[in-house]
Length: 320
Image 1 (cartoon, rainbow, N blue to C red):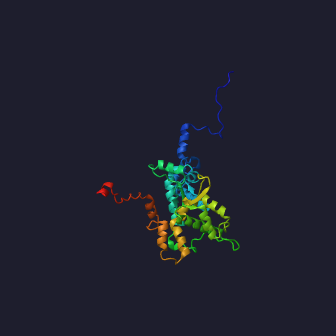
Image 2: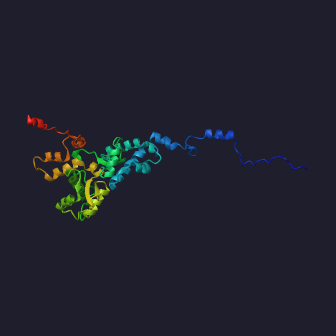
Image 3: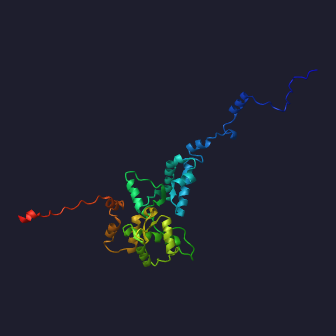
């Protein structure tokens, strides 16, 4: 007898596999909040609406936290680090995130991110490169630091201090460090923008800080100032001997600046000479409202035309 060709009937407790038509109908009947049917692009959708982890609001909060951490460590806020540590795959939203974070910093903390200037061209090679690229627009440094936006009425030691107060038996090294780099920057500004190592040592000796300071040894403190961008140490060995000069660094220009140096001088002299302001204006170029316009105007001015003297008498005139 030939074997039966009938198919075995499936048990009642086993459901047959759904057909493509049934599968599509079930997908349509699923509720919208089914976790198995969440769209893969939901993060991008929420980012546009401002509620997801990739939204401008959340990224701006992350940038605020990163900026505060950098300021605490005195590390510049670099655009490359912002892209890697804050933005991630949302690098195209840099400008929106940056503006939103700056708004939060100003509204909540009274600070803002200010771009650092480029380092001055001091060596011969750097000056030649700068002269060759003089026609090109100046490049951005892509580095920022936090700057206080509080009014002058609130910039008092009782309100804005250097940091947490140390224990009673320990010196306030943070306040000492701020005072030291402010004084060094003021010395450099008052010397025309460049100060030799010998003159700086002489000024520190007058402060009894030529060897040791409340922070650390003078050599280590100056190295820390250079590392953090307050000053720039220039070493020239072209003449055979090592000649070391100091200039104000990018962070020193933004955080202290010429106005900060002038305020230090005013605090030291108090009700000093009547012509103190005139001397500061001549030394620092603070004769205008913006504080540096006079200095920039003098540095960018064209050379004065050659004075024309009286014509020399000719021999023929003498003979006549």
